[in-house]
Length: 243
Image (tube, rainbow, N blue to C red; front, side, top):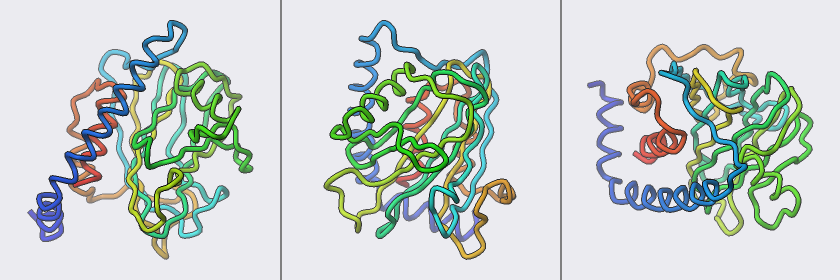
């Protein structure tokens, strides 16, 4: 094992208590959310078709980190692809911006982790807020819940996810996040790990090469059991992030 991997493993071992505390909290959140969705007969779910193909990449977010320089996490194609993104807001980071493309008009299935610490806003590519996970955001919150339940239709095009801290979470606190977007069932699963910005980070991920030496985190993600549910996949990724 390389020195870097050894250091990462050591750091992970020293924070096990925090890891399991965080995971227990996330499990509780997801269980409550899934129960609520199951209770709605008209809610649309996202399920794997057969044995889906898994694809992973690791990219650095832009040092500018704005709506215009959002990190591309992939294209959502109805009945074909699901995109996942995992990263963290370091102390002092105001927000991360992630973009995805919707190939054609249709309802999306939106997933989010760390509900009590993160706020997710769905925006147009020009920054107009369409949905907001903040319960005090009125109609935008209603739209967010509709997206979680697969009941909100969007036109084809590019959209931006703004990931920030929930109300009451201090700017000095590091916050891990996980989001995923699908449009019904999928046969290909794309996962992007968002790394800290660097002076050489490209504004668009189209200019970033997929890492030739993926971290232990990505190696673990590539070995996930194929065909996991969205909840299982998000849970596995958050464990890697907390390690």
